[in-house]
Length: 384
Image (cartoon, rainbow, N blue to C red; front, top):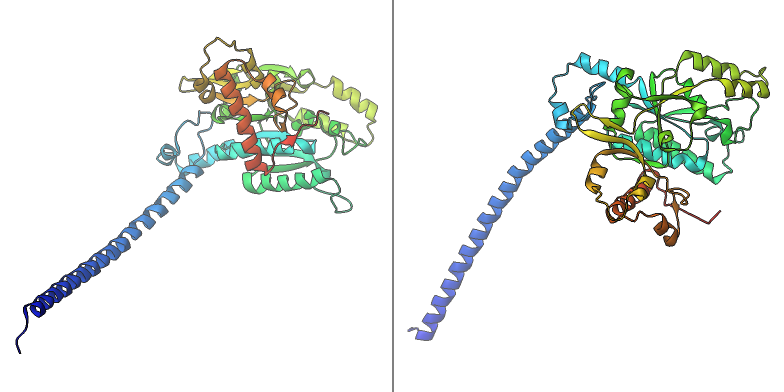
């Protein structure tokens, strides 16, 4: 049987299609196998590298900053340091003798303190973090929480302890027989009961920390290297200097407090003794020099930005990178924890545009940290 030319062409075309289809299938199969093999080989090194990196971070963060020195080294440099295990233990023990402390007697102010501790935790400050608060917040006779603020306070206390490693210190009122719910029953003089620490630093709660290293420095440097002003606690005023101060608790001060808390001491006598007692505090200078020679602003107030003239050059980058601590205080604004009308906030805003941008960043940072650390939005200001 003879094939026509059309049948021969169709056969040849079919063979060519079959051949190329087979080759395409085989090449796809080979490529697939190579891809799978490459992925299998690539996955193993990535996992091993990830484990190695995780171990490196863990080791780096476990090495304490050098006591009495600026903790300016990066985590990788800390990991590569030659400190022996014994030296690490000594440094860790010395860091346990200094602390950041907050005394909160008003439940509406608790979040601000938790924010400070959360920031110190995030910045890996090695000093202890201590939160003092009325014992009634943690213990009630009925076992029920009637005040919604106390319900939030207990949640925040748990966050502070579990998430940020804060040491909780429940307090009795300073003077026996006073109202346990009144903030005035828990004065700052109670800070002197923390005799397990050689030095404490107290920060204003309506504030933000931009860099903890300079603050760690003044906690650890010898007193002779800190050009601090010493005043009595009763002379402390609501000024820029009062937003940050140091305390060195002593047994003498602690014994005075213990005496005042004895039931047989009348309230009138205790008040008189308290007014005449001298509880020294140290106020460090607003500006300092780091061990590496760089200059730093230890503390400032946001209201100082309003003093910069509109036509004056203001280095916003230097302010943000060279400032450790900022107290957000801008009358007539009540505080950074409140959402105020736009017109009121605009009236308190600096006139210098660069300073105004930093001012906005400070308040936006506070708002973000309030939500991140406390899970709370800003309170609505109602003009009261």
